[in-house]
Length: 278
Image (cartoon, rainbow, N blue to C red):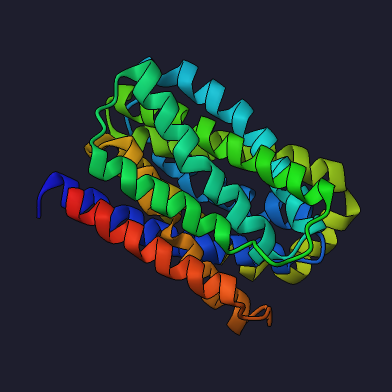
């Protein structure tokens, strides 16, 4: 398998894991406590690795920038899921990200992009966004979803540059999850106080599973960004919406709509274009 082929496979697995993590967050009664539990579990899991992996010396700045963006991202993600169904908020936030990330990396960092990749990115962005059509969307839900999408694009760019600057992909990945778990998870847990303690007592198993899947999801995506081009891979990762639709319908009991079926078709077309372009 070529480097591009391996990177594509990694982001597809990443997308599936990402949909499960977000479904776990959406199903939680107190979403900030659930997010603190997920990030805290991830941080504890990677903690032993930071003692054996090389320090990501050239990437400290990118880690700091990414951590700040992730704080805003996670806060707005929680607010979006509190304001709307998963299949309304999730497509909007994920649909806005790949196009914006592509514009940033191409214009600021000289990342190469072909007409085929641009067409695939456009299909995925449009397809993901279609999934939210036909549903009531309040202004707060729209605002939080779009802010989340902008943060996704920004941390994708920051982390892609950081993982490339680090001596190894695992060192950057481990420190990224440790920082998010200790700082953001700690802040969210402190914010919720006793509610977090009660959530941890009843949902610790789900938190551990989602924390492990979170490492798989974003860890694979970061490693892939080190191997391939960001515009193609960032858009390909948004096939997570296909897994998200299945989870929302089967487990969260949300309804299938014509828009969601159309969305799946357009995303599938975009994914085929992106895979062929690699």
